[in-house]
Amino acid sequence: MRGRNILAFVVSFLLAAAVLAQGSGEAKAKKATKAAASNAVIWPAADLKWADMTPGPPGVKVVDLWGDHTKGAYGALIKFPAGTIATLHTHTSGMRIVVVSGTWIHGPEGKPEVKLGSGSYLYQPGGSYRHTSACDKASDCVVFAESSGKFDIKMVEESKAPAKK
Image (cartoon, rainbow, N blue to C red; front, side, top):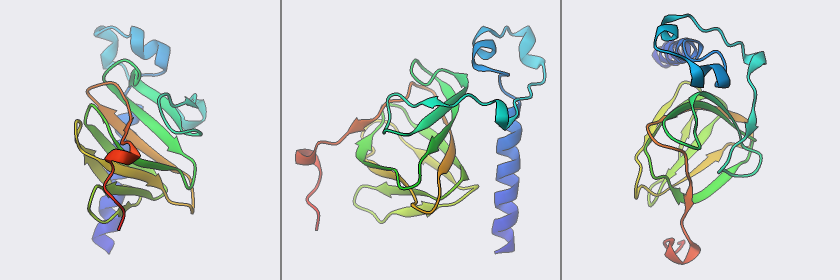
């Protein structure tokens, strides 16, 4: 158990360091030159500008730390209200996800759901990888997500979803 706590602390610390080492703001990050990339960046949590996640479930908020999740490669913090559920779906591009706070529930199609707490890591392949995503009802969830392609969510139609047993 102690090893898990240490691992969670190390992952959280590295995530925070990576986030702080990125762009100092959405507009500045997009206009940054190669010379400016070596400058330190400090972006306090209080200065983050949360916006509605589009596309995405209602109530979900996003802060693009670099890139633009609607256009291409990005790194972002995404906030899900407690109890948010995204039914069976896919994404075009793979996503690397680190849970910052809350309990994220990942449900690979045909397999048991997995509850992921703070410091947990998940890679979701793009393409045909069908899964559900949810935030536990106990508290909001914040995740860090990174992808080489723009964010999308393709809901699996009920008629194409496997029958529930």
